[in-house]
Image (tube, rainbow, N blue to C red; front, top):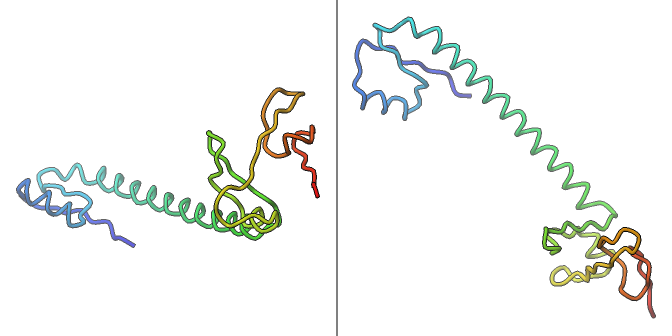
Length: 138
């Protein structure tokens, strides 16, 4: 964990101040402007609180993403994520193995028009007449 650091000096050049900040100081205050110290301390405490909070949420996001990935990768559900152009951007392992498709290449995803809604939906065959249903053919 980084320790907050405020440099207090009688006089420093602008170049030195920039160098000190680049090397890790959080702020600097000239001795003739010590009235600024309480505000600088408050701002620094708030900065570190926000950074700690951000890190907490980032850790939670990573933990949840790992949990989600484990569910999707090990589940017995065929999951396909499509981009706005209708191309697969993710295909779950079960879709590949459970449906018997190769690990790469085309996945045989087709769209059929749902006559009730007039919208396209994934699945089915152009010949079965039932949107979203598949028919096994010998």
